Amino acid sequence: MDVAPDGLIVRGTTTGVDLSERRHDLRHSVPVPFASDPFAGYGVDHRQEPTGPADLGAVVKARAIQCALSRVCSLCGMSLQTGPSAQTTFVGSPDEASANTFGFPPMHPDCADFALSTYSRLGVPVLGQPLVRTEWVVVVTGGFELERPSERGAPVLFHPNSVTSTRTVTTG
Amino acid sequence: MAISDVKEYTHLTDEEVEALGRELDELRTEIEESRCADDAAYITRMIKIQRRLAAAGRLTLFASRWKPAFFAGAAMLGLAKILENMEIGHNVMHGQWDWMNDPEIHSSNWEWDTAQPAEQWKHSHNYIHHQFTNVLGHDNDIGYGILRLAREQKWNPANIGQPVYNALLALLFQWGVALHDLDLEAIRKGRKDPKEMKRQLKQIRRKVSRQVSKDYVVYPLLAGPAWWSTMQANMLANLIRNVWSYVIIFCGHFPDGAMHFTEEELEDETRAEWYLRQMLGSANFNGGPLLHVLSGNLGFQIEHHLYPDLPSNRYAQISVRVRELCERYGIPYTTGPLYKQYGQALRTIVKLSLPNGMTSSDKPTPPPSPVRERRRLTDAERPVRRTETGPWMSRRTA
Image 1 (cartoon, rainbow over the protein chains, first blue to last red):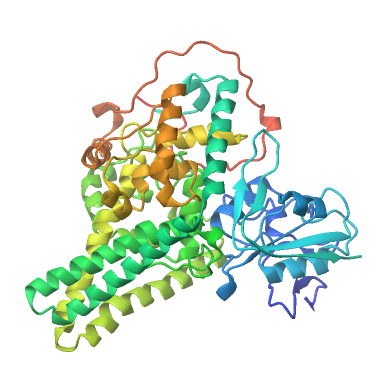
Image 2: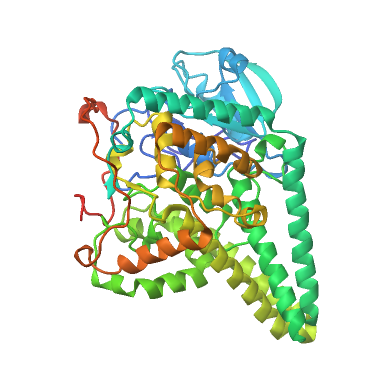
């Protein structure tokens, strides 16, 4: 991992993931995922100063929908263009994987690897999880269905529809 | 008239809206579960036809100094561009075929034959337009920042030139679309991140030079002595595509029956309410299978807005059920012949070039509604929302 002079993790050296443009959470010295950042994305004035600490476990509804419709990565916020494979990745709990229902929007495969190695060691809820998690499932898929909330306050959900691989990762 | 409460407008109770939502969910599940090899064969066949048409057009233009070859080549190439942009590119980028797991026919990788970079289209169209459909101050497709298409939009003397701007927009449509995601209003107000703007401009420059090189340098050079007529034919092909795409797109949301909404309707929306807004904000047009293919199945605009990521070849099938649901729930299902739908959009463009006081609205008005108690969320309960609403009046106008 590359670390900027101010101590912030900005990119994965083996993955080519570059998060230097993302807002950083200064408590943990990590970038705030695009989908967790209420101060990123459509409708946000770039002159607006972020307030309060970042919630690394949050999924901002507007960003989740933007990720799904614009086909952008929930970690780096860039296009999900993934070259010859055209695969996207979901990261979640074993329960989410067995229900084929994820709460955190899709990522680039490289961003998913970076996210697991970076966030899971922090000891706080991350990537849309309500609790600290040490066992993760990574699902690689060609496509997915977006499920909009059926009631107010309910989360946006994602259902992979053409899964090519599933693996379990234990961290921490 | 812009609608600030969709349920109130349609006179449906909360329970009825939720029941409608459940029926639309069931329809979606049915289509998802029945996607099969026939659907995959449809899109691969379309791509094959489009590529053969383009190749035949390009080859014919080698003889374009002969007038019949000029017109035949331009027509084939124009048709190929229409198919590529409408039925293939637009729908592939919505993710309608991602389930096939084909890396070529995939929303992440498709780059289309027009000046706007695919990545920017997926933001301005897939997200902004489809998420904020016909919501004043959000959906930049309402007039593309050039035309006044809602009575709530402030009139200014420059609007008198609308019929001319409209004609120019039709002729130069791909260039207008190329600049769409820059959001000129946000740039003007200083809200746009300069870094993001620079990145987008770089993308546009790269895509434009690729398109211009292809149609106006490489293929004309390959045509040798027919370079000048090939260049002219390519320009004609682009023009045909521009005008056709413009007409189809303007028929989707600007005929009289397609309603506009205020920002109030946007927040806290459930899936069922979102469905309802999509149905009220979109308009179909009638036609045969060829017309629907050439319009990217956007003659089924209502169905497309309900299910933007379901395969376009299923919209005709879906439309039967959606129409039946609309009848059963008493919801307007706006449709008509293409000429009528476009005629209504054109009339709106001409009328709204004048101040509101000089013209009357053509939007249908709902019958008087029964009074019902319905609690809306307080400001404290709502998430923070965008305060920038663009050049819109805050009150309903005549």
